[in-house]
Each structure stands twice: as C-alpha cells, then as structure tokens.
Length: 246
Length: 246
DNA sequence: GCCCCCGAATTGGTTGACCAAAAGATAGGC
DNA sequence: GCCTATCTTTTGGTCAACCAATTCGGGGGC
Image (cartoon, rainbow over all chains, first blue to last red; front, side, top):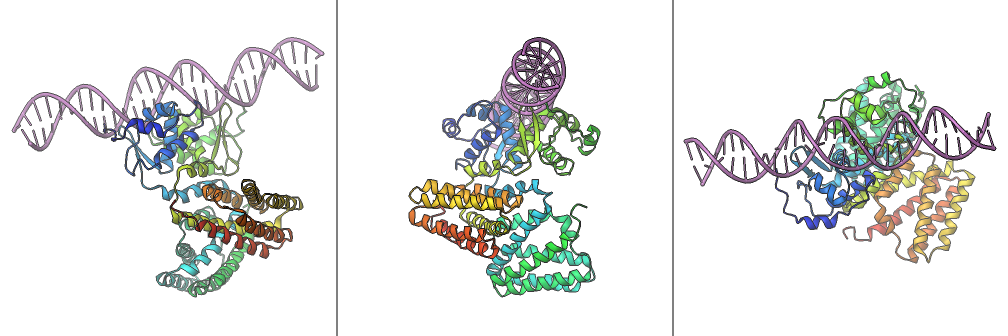
C-alpha cells in the first residue's frame, strides 16, 4: 500500500474539525473541500485514508464515503480501490460545472431557458466584438459563407449556424459564459434543431447573422448587442410559433 | 410513511437498467440522472426508496446511497430521513455555497463570473420592469428606504442591497434566471461582502439603486437595463480596485 | 546487487444488522 | 364524526464484519 505522505498527522488533524454525528454529508464535503483547497495538498497527492478521515471528522466511514463519492462526481478527487483517494487537477474548472448542474432541473422551463439564452448570447456578442482576434473574425466569416451556400440544405445550414454561435461565445474570452451558454443550448437542443423549417427562415437568419458578424468584425459592441438582440427575438418568435407542449 | 407515487413499478423498472456489481458510483449517478430528467418525475415528486432503487439497479444500497448523496450535493435531489428522496423543484444553493467555502477563484475566473453576473442582473432588471407587480414595486421601495436609513450601518445597508437584488430577480418572472443569478452570487459571496467599504460608496450605490428602482417602477425596460448596467459597472470597478489576489 | 515472487498489510467496496426519523394506521375518548 | 395518542411500518443513517484490489516488504534465486 502507498506510504502515506510525509505530512504530520497532527497537522492534518488541526485542519479538519470534527462535525456532529448525524451531520449532513454536505458538511463533510465542506470540510473536505477546505482540506483540499487549503494549500497543503497539491494535485496528484493522496488524501488520508477513509478510516482516518472518518476518525478525524468524528463521523462514520459511510459519511466519508458518501462525501468522497460526491467529490469524485464533481471531478475534484479520483478514487482508486485498494490504493486511495487522490486530488485531481486544479479546481478552477469547477465553476462552469457548478452552474451547469444547477441548470439540470430547469430542462422543462423552455420559455425561461430561451430568455436566459438570449441574454447570454447578447452578452457574448458584445464581449466578442471587443475581444475577438483577427483569426477568429476569419472563422466567423467562413461560417457565414457556409450558411450562404447552404440555404437549400438546412442540416448543413444549422450546423454552420451552431458553429457560428460557438465561435462567438469562444471569442467572448469568458470561460464561464461560454460554458454556461453551452449548457443552456444543450438543454434547448431539441428546440434549436427545430428552429428552421424552410429556406425563407434560413434567409432571415442569415441576414441577421451577417449583421452580427459585421458588428463584431467592426469591433462595435453596441451594434453587436443590438444585432444579436434582433436575432434572438426572431429565433425566440420562431420557437414560440411551435407548440411548446408537443 | 408517504404512500409511494402511483407510478407503475414495472414502468420504472424498464427505465432503470441494472449496472454491473462493482461499477463505480458514477454509473449509478448516470442512471439516476436519466431517470430524473426523463420526464417521468415532476419536480417535487418522490423517488423510489433506496432499497428499491438498489434492487432495480442490481447494486447494493451503499452504492445507491453514495449516488444519492452526490446528487444532493449537486442540488438535484433533496434527501429527507424517514421520508424519502425528492426531486427538487428549484436549484439548491448547496453546491455553490459548499464550493465557495474553499474554492479560491483565480482573478480571471472572478472577473468572468462578475461579467456573467452583470449580464444576468441587467437582464433581470429589464424583465422586472415589464413584469413586476404593484406589491413587488412596494417591496423594492422598502429596500430603498432601508438603504437610505443605513448609510452609517454598512452591514444593514448590504443586507438591504442584497434583498433589493433578490427582489428584482424574483420580479423578473424567470425561475431559471433567478436561480442562476443566485448561484453566481453565492460563488461571489466573498467579493459581494467586501463590496462596500465606506459611506461614500454606499451613497453611490444608493443613487444607482434609486435609478434602477425608478425605471422598474415606471415599467421602462430600456431605462432599467441602462441603470443596472451603470450599477454593475460601478460595482465591478469597485471589486477591481481590490487586490483580487489577496 | 538486482529481479521476481509471495505473503502481509493497507485501502476501498459490499453487506446485513441495527438505530433514528417520519409517516400511516388503529383504537379510544368526547 | 373528529381529534388525540399510541403502535406499527417504512424510510433514511450508522456500524462492524467481511470481501476485493493494490501496494509494500522480505526472502530467495541468479
């Protein structure tokens, strides 16, 4: 079995406070997070064994196991049977995950999700206008070209449409926003796919995309925001014209 | 004990696939999430008991418990001893709150989160302006009054400040936006608490809040959006003037 | 001295018994 | 018939024993 790291057990004991018996697993998670982010453990290092954690926290092993299971789902630790529990890479990637999990319950709130998506897309366009690189402008242009060529192939059009939006979000230089937007889009995926029904709607969307592109390429945040707002309104109206209950 | 919902047990059995013994808890979580988001269960409804889930999944009760513990941390279910496990009907603050304890955000992630918060608050103000009820306008006015009286008691000022924002989000009539904003605020909790340092900053914030309030009370979405944008810019600048690394 | 194998120790995973909390059912009193 | 108290059942929470997986240390062979 792995030799335990050279930490002085007494030191670790000072960092973890015993919690009352019967305390919700959330409290155990909190304590463990404090331990994990307290600076004593670096990514890759091994946590104390479950039995030791249970003793120091003053809870049973079950509670520790449940808390560690949660931390593993969150990607904070990696549990290896027979070996131990290891701290994974930096926790900075947890942010988008935190917000995305919270969205899971909202999957049925389509109207509300569409509104939130609109707000985030508008903000993304505004940020992209001021932060986009020349290479990224080129990529947007390419998606616009693909859409122009695909008015009679709606599947291909929608694919370029999606890529256009993904690129804008990436160019916003805000990881939290990008990932949050992606989570919302995932929840709305069915509706997005049904968004365009014919060539005429594709032509309208293309015009709107071009206005967004031009504003972003011109680094005009206000115009980009306005153009995206128009687009989100059109897209929202299109979805609203579908029966949201079907 | 609560009567079990009228679901046909055979139906639920069809939806949950047995997983191999010894499979990681993550697989159990996955199955449960499929069950929970498959549309059969409405928010607030009660899941099958642990013992039944264990049987149907073909795993031990421990694995089910660990999976459910994780789902509770993630905010998806609510576990009540002696009663059962319920699908939540709104986002829990447990995860953001739990993580905010030890999750040391990098300066760049903090900036990103502040930006996202700004976008959401602005959108909330715009929606609130068009959707707020007369009673809710009264409540906003009361928070404004409290802030006026509290310029020399910053703790109380901040409390009214927080309530003011919560009320705006509630008046936006968009649960997804409200909950998302609350999660973001929880993650930014440390910075929010440090936001106001003296009476002068409180006076600026109060002026900005009053502008927001007046626009919302006048049902002027455009003005509300503009006023909230100013406020978020000021608040963001205030945080930026702090040393994000300290 | 190095490598391999085996046994012991350690660590996580599972199980079933038992305890704690809550809900439901039943009986008695008014 | 309604309300209250008590008992029973159900559900989640805890514990200790045992099993599965991994690591380490020691001994033997070359």
